[in-house]
Image (cartoon, rainbow over all chains, first blue to last red; front, side, top):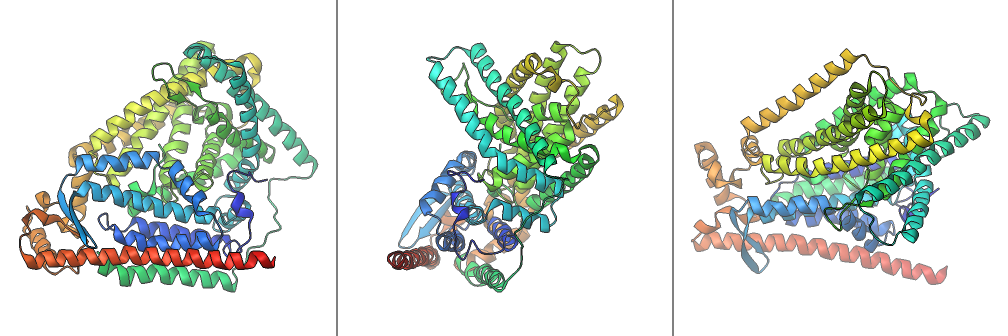
Length: 258
Length: 343
C-alpha cells in the first residue's frame, strides 16, 4: 500500500513517527503560517526558524539528502518568480553579514527571502508527510472535520495511485521500445491519446471490479480503521516544545535580528 | 501553476483556505445526494488515473525539448459530472500537496480553487452549453476544446490576482498576468487537444463512457448555466478592473497596506510626512536593522557602526542556527551509530 519511491520513510519508527497525526498537522500548519508572516526583508531569522523542521527531520531519521532533493524537485515555479524580483525592485541596500558588507538591491533580498521561506516551509511539510502514514493523516484530518466523502476519496486515490502509475510506466516503456523518432504532432498526439484512453478504460474496469469485490464484502460507504488516535503525554510534550520554540523565536530573536 | 506558500500573505492564504473549504464542503454535500457508495471506488481510481495520465507526455512540435501532458480536470468533469469531478480533482491537488509537496500547505486553498473548483465547473458548463442540442462529434470536440482553454485560463488568471493581493512579489501585476495567460493559453490548447483526442478514442472504444451512462451527470437548465457564467465573469472582471485601476502593481498595494514598514520604499514613503517621520525614527533607533535602505545616503561613521553591528547580529543568528543544526545532526548520528552495533 505504499510506494518505494515516494513515502518510504513514513513507515519507519521513531519518536516523531509515533506522535499523533493531528498534533503534527496542526503544528506544521501554524509553523508555516508563522514563517510566511515573517517580514519580507529579514533573511537571517529564517535560519533560526529552519532549526525546528531540521530537528524533526533528524529525529525522524529522514535522510537530509532525500528532503533537499525533494525540495529541489518542486522548486521551479517559485524559483522563476523569486528570480524575477531583482528585475523589478532595484532599490539599493547595503547588506551586512558578519565582517562582510556589500551593496545589493531590495529585489535580491526579496528573492532570497522567498526562497528561504520556501525551503523552510517545505522542510516542515516534508517532515510532516514523511513521518506520518497517509492513512493516519487521513484519520486525523477526518477528526479535524474534513468531509467524509473527501476522506474516502483521498483514501482510494492513495491506494490506487501507485498501481496506476505502474501501469502508466508499462505503457510508456512500450511506446519507448517502439518509437525510434519523433513522428510529428498529429501522430504523437494520436498515440498519446490512445495511451491515455486505454489507461482510462482500464481504470474504469478496475474500479468496477473493486466495487463488486467491496460490495461482496459489505462495503456500505463508511470507512472503518483499527488505528485509534489518542492524544498522549508525548503529544502534549511535542506541542509544548513546538509552541515554546515558535514563541521563543518570536519574542526573543525576532526583535534582535530584525 | 501550483501556488506556493511564499507567494501569499497570511490573510490571503487563510481567506482562500476558508473559501476552498466552504466550497468543497458544499460540493461534498451536493455530491452525497447524487453519488451512491458503489461509485466511491470509481472516483478514487479516477483520481489515481489523473496522476498516471500526467505521466504520459508527448513531444510538442514547435519547441523541441518541451513536452505536453494533460491536467484532466475537464475530461473528468465531462465524464463524471461537475460535482464528482471537482471532488476528484480537489483530492488530486491535496495529494499533490501532501505527498509530492507540490504547492504548500497554506496555498492549498488557492490551489483547490484555481485548479479544481473553477476549472471543473467552468469547463463543465461551457462543454454543456456547446453540446446541448443534437449530438454530433464535432460539437463535442469544439465544446471540450473551448472548455479546456477557458477553464485553464480562468484558473491561471486567479494566480496573479492572489499574488497581487498578497503583495509578496515585486513583479508588476500586469506583467505577471500576461505571462500567466500566455503560458496557460499554450497549456490550455495542449490540454484541449489531448482531451479531444481522448474523447475521440473513447467514442470509438467505449461510447457509453462519453454518453450519459456514468454517475453524477447533472442536468442543468440552460438558464442556470448562463447565470452562473455571467456571475463568474462579472466577479473576475470586477476583480481585474479593481486591481488594474486601484493598484497598478502589487508593490503599491503593499505600501498602502503596510505603513508599519516604512523603510520599505523611499520613493513612496517620502510623500507622507507621518511615514517619513516613522522612517527617520526607525533608522535612528531601530534595534540593529538587518540591512539599511538608505545606504547611499549614509555617510556618518556612527551609522556605519550600527550597520556593522547589525551585520554581526545577523551573522550570529545564522551561525548559531547552523551550529545548532550541526549539533542536532551529530548527536542523532552518534546515537544511531551506538545503537546499530548493539542491534
